[in-house]
Image (cartoon, rainbow over all chains, first blue to last red):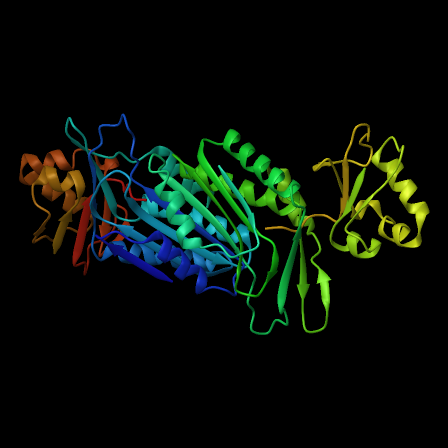
Length: 147
Length: 147
Length: 81
Length: 81
């Protein structure tokens, strides 16, 4: 398992190829990547991500370990950035490796659902008219009931 | 949408980064990669994949288009190889881009489920003791009932 | 019309494709004709539940009509992905 | 103990962290003490349903005990991913 919390960009291509190459005994690799949406008509200038150093790493590690224990998973990778990101930049990624595609998919969805509402990150959107904290969504909390 | 059927290897890193970079207006990218399992104690020497040129491309295109129509999907990518592959090699990948992670995940699972049982590929395993066609699994056919 | 065989169907019949002159109305009629030819066909088509068929490169059923069809393909259930 | 604030809780209170001398038995007791301090605290803690709390970097509830605790953090619901 690898959990990374960093300010600088990550290389989705290199990360994916390294993760997949490291798990040739697994038949299925799933990745999820989150991107700051770059909408032509959207006034978003930047997204600032605050986090809780120490707790963030611990929370992500616990979420990843739970996924590894719950599904038949060979490995899991979580990378999440903080700081100031502009539209089009990648915020985070997860990857899962399993012998079975169903496990790889479900575990990746689980990682995302928990990471959304249980890892201490907070997003602030900077637009032309001001700044505001992104509200949590009821649907994100509801997503946890699936697990 | 991009559908590729080829004998030569593909670069999962380059494909993922190109796909993600091309969809910055989408917040969620999901990829699935299938690998010929490289098991230390497994006698598998190679996997040969036969396909039906012409129909393969048409079937994959139809599956991808159905996914794009059914979910709120910005784009879909399918790459599938044929010919002789050795353990550890990547067989195929799919990628989906959506504004919503749920759509990206579900569409990728749909692509995989249909690609498994509805695209004209047949796998043959070459082991130390002989060669045999991989049997279709009832669970793969059953997976389609979900959709 | 062109008749194509894939995977173990191809191996049992021994050729990947052939031209067949037929007036069979449906895929099932064509299969019945082929089975009468030689034992390798009889062997390949002995269990239709283990076979799939595509007509003009579209998956279909054994009762599909063959009027105007250019290409019929027989193969086992797919195992891609 | 150290008390940390994140996101709009940090903005409302005006500082990211502070040392608090307290004999509060639970998180709820600590919140009650803080609310009495100044209006900015009262404002930050006015709606506990909009807040989450972590004790020694583990998510918990407002009735969590504070015995032996080194660090308490208050913040809005998380919005990562």
